[in-house]
Length: 128
Image (cartoon, helix red, strand yellow):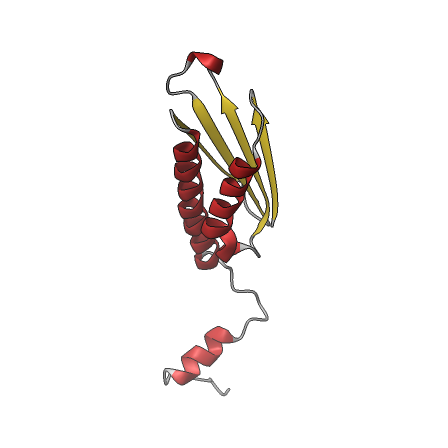
């Protein structure tokens, strides 16, 4: 899983980078084979004026599915990171579950026939 972190409007400290990486690994490591890349954008929307303006945008690029994009704005950047990453993890879990449910059975898939045989299903063959 490739992680890309960008900061706009301020310097990205090593502590902040470590926090983002730790939170991402905790929330998304279970799905590492589904995730190709995680991009995190951190920004201070109002600059030095203060207020609820710390933004964290998380984009999870998946193999064979649409990207998961989550954004959160808070006064504390660490809280924005935590909330955005948690929401991205939950959204990814729903998306992966949907992908598993919607797996199509191909013509060479014999799981259906095996399940019918195990359940005791019989077939009737007409002989002319």
